[in-house]
Amino acid sequence: RGEFGHQGGFGEQGQMSGKEGMGKSEFGGPSEEEMGKMIEEQERMMKKQHLEQMRRGMRGLEQGLKQITKMMDNLQKKGIAVPTDVQGLVSELTAALLKVRSATEFTEDIEAAMDVIQEKGQDLGDVGQKLGMLEHMSQVAKQVEKEFSRMDKELVNAKKSKNAAQFP
Image (cartoon, rainbow, N blue to C red):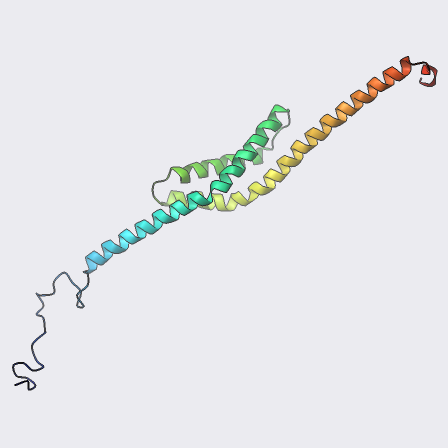
């Protein structure tokens, strides 16, 4: 009849016993175990994406390291010593970059390598400027040597000319 408490009314219908809802939350969603697995999977995917973003972000640093390494090689070929702290910085950053580039998942080692890159990567710009100045100074020294050589030749030619008596 639809009265409260009778068949067809608002009573016992729609209620589940404890056994009917096993494996599901009380609202019909996934169980705690399933939720845990879903959260783990989501965290794993986020870490993977984070690692990929870091790799993309390091392309500029890799290019900078290549340039600085090339500058160091050029200076050494010219006989100019590269400071040991610069060599150490380049070695440390190169090792950290290789570690991150070869990583397959985001671990504590990768996080430590990223910390090194963030801390020391900013110093790379200063190092690049200093090495650039050293390279420039070596070019200036070479130009000065050429100019002295040219002046010496002019002096020798001037002494050989008719007016050589003017030069001691």
